[in-house]
Length: 408
Image 1 (tube, rainbow, N blue to C red):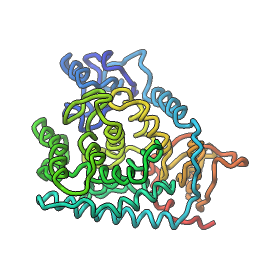
Image 2 (image 1 turned 90 degrees about the vertical axis):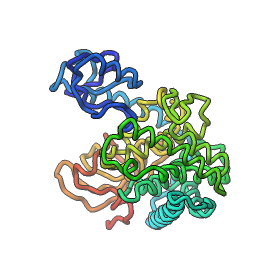
Image 3 (image 1 turned 120 degrees about the vertical axis):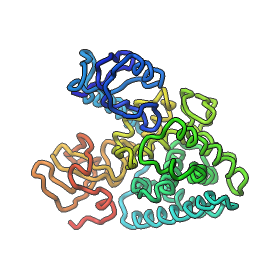
C-alpha cells in the first residue's frame, strides 16, 4: 500500500516510493529506495522535502499515515474549492478554425525561437525583436480566451524540446498574467518574450549535460545552474528584451522558500513575474515526457504544485494559476459519472468543474463512441466529471479529438 508520510516521521526500514519533488531538484540518485540509515532521513529533511510516499509492501508501515489515495482526494477537494470561486470571465465556444490557427502559431513560434537560440549557441549577435510578431500572435490567441494553444504546448519532441518548452512558457506566462489582470498588451508582449527566452542560457551548456538521459551529478548540476547567468549575460548584451523580460529569465528558478538559484532569494525578494515564472516552468516540465521521467497529466501536476505551495511557491499565486488554466485544462481526458470518457474542449472560468467536453469512449463497455459535444454546464445536462484519466491507459490521444469537428 502506498502511504503519504511526513519526512519527520520516517524510520529506517521504510521504503520510499516517491520523494514527491521535481525529479531534478533533489540530491538522491534514485526516486525509490529502502531507507537503510538515519543519514538518509536527515538528508531528506535537509532537502526541504515535507512529505514522501512510502510502499508498505516493501518496507515498514506508518500506521497513522493516510494512503496516497486518501491524501490525493483531500488535496483535490481543497484545489477544487480554490478553483471554483467565480470570476465572471466569458468562455468562447469551440472552433476548428481556432485549432488550426493555434497549430500555425505554435509551429511558427517553435521555428523562430529555434533560430534565435541556435544563434545563442554559436555566440552570434542576436536581435530578439525578430520574435515579437510571433509573441504578438500568442498574445492574441490568449486574449481570445482560447485554450487550444496552451493544450498544444503539451506536445514535445525530444530533439526540439528546449525550443518547444520555451514556447510553452511564453504561452503559459501570457495566460497566467492575462488571468491575473492589471497587465497591458505591451506588458504581455514583454512577458511573452521573457518566457520565450527564459532558457536561452541552456544553449551555452554542453550537450552531454543538457541532453543527459539520467540524473545529473552534483558537478553537472552546478554547470546546469549556470544557464541562468549565461542567459542573462548574453541577452543583456543583445537588443530587444526589456527589464520585465529579463526578470523572468533571471528568476524562474528561484523558490519562495529560498531553496532556488542562482541567488537563493526568497518571498518578496523575488519579483512577482519571477514567482509566476517559477510556477509555470515547473508545471510545463513535469507535464512533459522526458527520457528520465514520465509526464504527469495536467490535473495531477496541478495537485503536486498545489501541494508545494507555501514552500516552493507562493500559495496565492498557485491558486491564481490553477484558476488561469483550469483543473481540467483543454485536452484533458475526463471520466464522467455516466461511465463515458470525454476530452475537454473549453473551460468555463466561472465553473471549472463543468467544461465543454467531447464524448469519445464508453469506459464501461470499453468501446469507442461517435464524438459528441456536451456542455456540462447546460441546465439540462445530467452528467458530471468524477475524475481524470491517463489517456495512454485507454489508447486515446485527446488532442486528435480537440482538433476535429464531431461527425454527429
